[in-house]
Figure 1 (cartoon, helix red, strand yellow):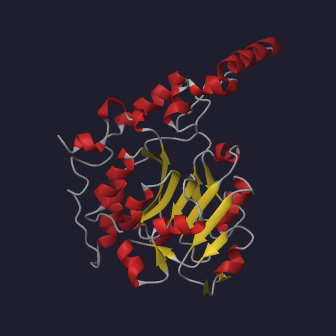
Figure 2: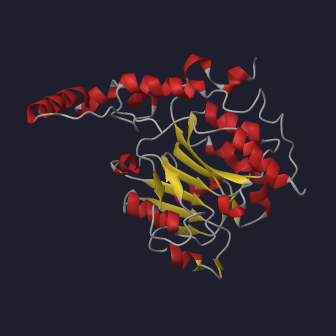
Length: 311
């Protein structure tokens, strides 16, 4: 991982004070922050990264593009769900495609420790302390199966004032008991899943993201963290309609015909991958991705997939 700031050792108090004054002159005040490329291209999330460092980060990101094996991420491995070797195919595909392309200096896994079963449940979040500095914080957690550790991690490592909403069509299981009761200290539980318009018309326990946002009165609000465990391939288009800062998603069963559109469209909407890890406890077959949204101005030299497809 590269560092966004240089580290220096100061030999005397005077030198340290002079450094502090110079940094204060550079970054004090909203007007100074607004001049930074990092501030402009991150929708005010990164407000302290010098332009020289930010341009280096841009160049590192550019070098990863296109972020997949060969000319087409669907070329090398076929989709073999239901066959004996589908997990091997999936693992190979994830090993060769869509790697980390951006690094958050203070990313944290939520929760970091203190829980049983930390292999599958915690999620990487980019610089939680930056979210904590905001006036408010809104988190959606799609799919929990009664596991509350992520929600607890948000309260502990971001802010107790974060407003969290957890969605799951199930109500209870043997391991975690009643979902609503388990989540009560951390989150508001809603007993429905997110799905497509067609699915929502067929089942009462499925709602679209549009229906959900409207029902909860969140129109016009930014969703700071959107954690999704279910139906990513069919619902991701709805995510792009909203102001979502970070997307944490467990992807499954790659490759499939829609997977290229998933990664291409998220990228071209400004989402860059800052974390990727395999679901080791389930013999992989899937991967945990974390994206943060930047302005497409961050993508230098025309490094958007809409341009790649034209070649």
